[in-house]
Image (cartoon, rainbow, N blue to C red; front, top):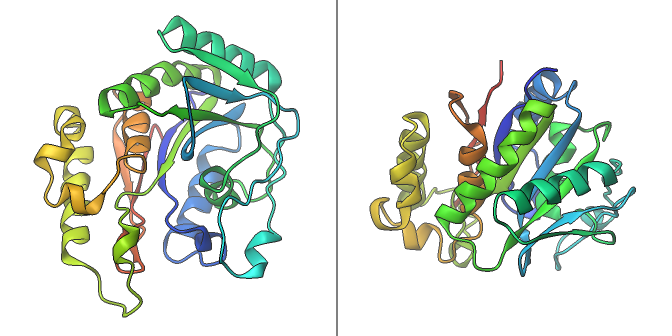
Length: 259
C-alpha cells in the first residue's frame, strides 16, 4: 500500500468554496496526483473543538454550514463523501494508545473547515472522510503530538489533512486589494520554518515569528499546521502558493510525501 500524504490547507473564509482564487486548482491538481489511491482522508479542523478528542463515526456525515451572513449559494453546497465507521473506531483506538482521551461521535457531520477544501482536493467526493476534533486546551506541542499519532495512519493509506489558515485575523479583513505587511511577513517566516523542517521554531512561533499575535489573535487556525507537521515525519515539504485573500488571510498551504 502506498503511503498517503500529509497536507496543511489554508481554508481562509467560507467564500473560498465559491472563489477558488490561486489555491483551488492547485489543490485539485494535488488531489488528482496524490489522493486518488488513498484509502481515506482524515481531517483536523479548528471549527470542531471539544473536550478531549472526538472522531466522526457516521456512515454518511452531513454537511454543516457553520457560518452566517454569506451569499445564499454557499448554503446550497454539500460534500457527500462517505464516512468510514471502522476507520473512526481504529483512529480513536490509535489516539487512546497515544495518550489522548478519544471517543467516536456517530452524529457529527463535516464542518466548513473540512468540506470547503475537500471540494477542491477531491471534488467527486469519492474517498471516505473522517474528521478529528481539536481539544479545547490544545497547544502547539499537543497539536504536533496529535499529528504524530495520526501520522501512523499514512502507512495504512490514509491521508492526514490539517485545515486551518496560515494567517487569521478577521478583525482586519480588508477589501482594498492591499496585502497587510504583517501578514505577508508572518507567512514568509512560516514558509522558511516549514521548508527548513524547523519544528522547534514552529512550536515556539508565538514567541519567534514576526507579528504572531496579530496574525493569530487566537491559535486555533495555526494549530492544524502543527498537526500536519507532526504527521509528516521525515518527509520533505512542498509549498503550495495560495496568495492572500481579503488582505490578511494567507492561503499558503503545504504537503509532505507527495510527487
